[in-house]
Image 1 (cartoon, helix red, strand yellow):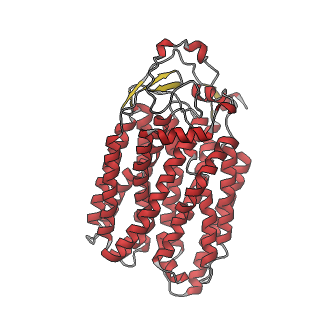
Image 2: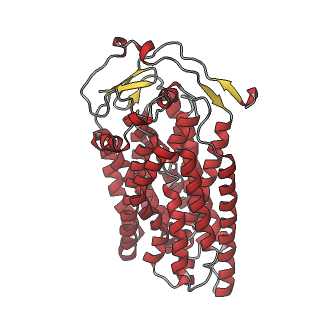
Image 3: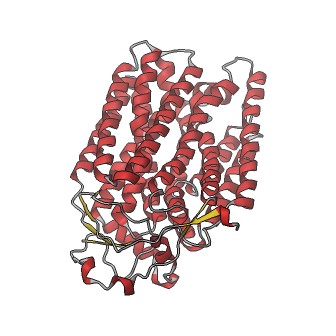
Length: 489
């Protein structure tokens, strides 16, 4: 590694003491760690330990840290991989009316082509989190990108009206790759980025997934027009599948060749301390149990699941909602979805930068959650006005806050559970989101079929209101930081 590819990370001048009240940090926190420091109490412990009482120089000697320019390459490659997988999640549902006609299936069957992503995640997340803890981030990303590539190639042979079962199998294989994606951003950020960049890097990692969803909204309606001739329709579908497979293959090759586990020298004192701990001192099962006993974290798990589950339902059913009020507007349905995601990407980046500067986790997440509820209410009552430009505006506002909430939840979870593994906490958050995603998608779909889109969207608003209430009820958490070793009480 040449000298110009890296630069020294400044040594900390002193051991800082930082207090967090109600989830809001009054001073900058250190970088996120991976493992539980066994001598420190966690979660709901009633022990109070003042950093001034510790001989910190003996307990936590300063170690060498560096930031590598390669960290941006790792983040970019992961974002590409996440983008490819997210695109394939939505390539059916955004033109659901076309695929229903092509495969001669009903609305529930086409919805399951999206919901299989949610269902697969639930039983596989615990073994994948174990793999992440025991084999590392590189092995997880390589295996996930392999599943993504294989699933994409399976679907290339399913552009035939009689091949619905096989295209569902291909989508299932792609859905397995999702389990290897959603818990990575916070871990990747802490392994490669410095203390002032962690939230921003996590937001960019989530942004890759959002960009894939945006492309999934935009491209399929363009590549697959709504034509009656089945042979012509099969040709367009085949083209879309081959493009997806080609991109997934290139990304898999890039991951195998370029993606690395971690830098030679840690980027922060937290990582330096974490990597100095023996694997025997960390128990994966004990970590899960500690998280499940952490009241504040479990409240976040439920509220995060409610918000992201609503987003999954809206994304899956967007085509049906738009077509009901604006027949023949498949392309604009995709553009509206694109508007939701682009606005959400902007929201994610702004929120990530804001968190890096203010560390006001609880206040920021509560505000964004409340605005998601308001955005959903406005969207619900303006969708049927007959003006597409109004839908574009309200969808953009909804996306800015609802999609922008995704990285906030990850980062707040790490704050509430530090020094537990980021992959474990984010995995539990995503598991909650998948469960609520299935429930909300099926329920809202049935409500739309019987009572229309307004009733379906109000159904989601009720649960966003519940989630907002849960956010506001999260108890006080006080954290004292001594260099990179917080003590919660």
